[in-house]
Image 1 (cartoon, rainbow, N blue to C red):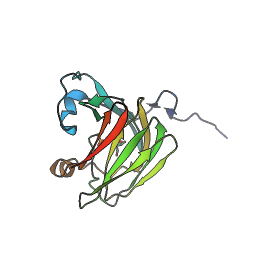
Image 2 (spheres, rainbow, N blue to C red):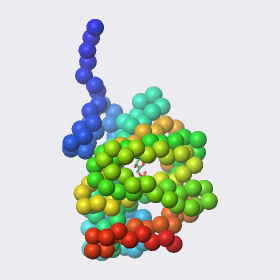
Image 3 (cartoon, rainbow, N blue to C red):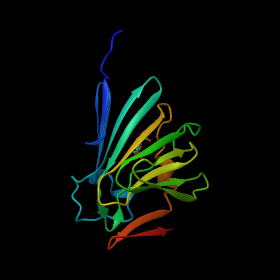
Image 4 (tube, protein in one colour):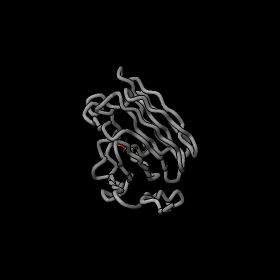
Amino acid sequence: MEIKDAKVFHDYLNGVIEGEGVKKRTKLYSNAKTFYKSVDSSVSDDQIMYEVYSYEHDGLCYGLTVMQPVCVNGECNVTRGHFHESLDCDEIYCGMGGEGLLLLMDEDYHCHAEKVKVGSVHYINGHLAHRLVNTGNSELKVQCMWPSNAGHDYKRVEEHPFTVRVYKENGELKVEEE
Ligand SMILES: O=P(O)(O)OC[C@H]1O[C@](O)(CO)[C@@H](O)[C@@H]1O
């Protein structure tokens, strides 16, 4: 029997996925300003807000999102957030490092959240928009699995933004519902 090395390696300790076919996208503050309530001129345009590694094979995607512990005028770092284009495609997240919230918004645009921490596993029904929030003082690392035909519908979330914002004031979390 031939025994081969895996073509892809998820380095849990360093928070990277490496190998054949792995894609990486980086979201800088310059391309994320509209995600937050207001623009913060003290945050550099070059500031990395989050990085997404993804590996797709035969209809399945495996990914890792690494979010920096950065606040924008006190608002905790968030991903852009999206519905799936195919609403029957679900997703699973698993906390790998740090602390955060998984913000979920239903099709009536009501929000609820789940706490993300090391080992927490989150099922995301395809009819829910999802956004991660880094509420901690270290990188938030979240492993993700989803069908590759899910697609990202960002437009719908831009038209109906998440109605909840999370701030950190003197180390305390403050949730504002709009
Ligand atoms: O695409 P967004 O909304 O910026 O968020 C990134 C998220 O999307 C995914 O790429 C796939 O759903 C996740 O890996 C990640 O958490």
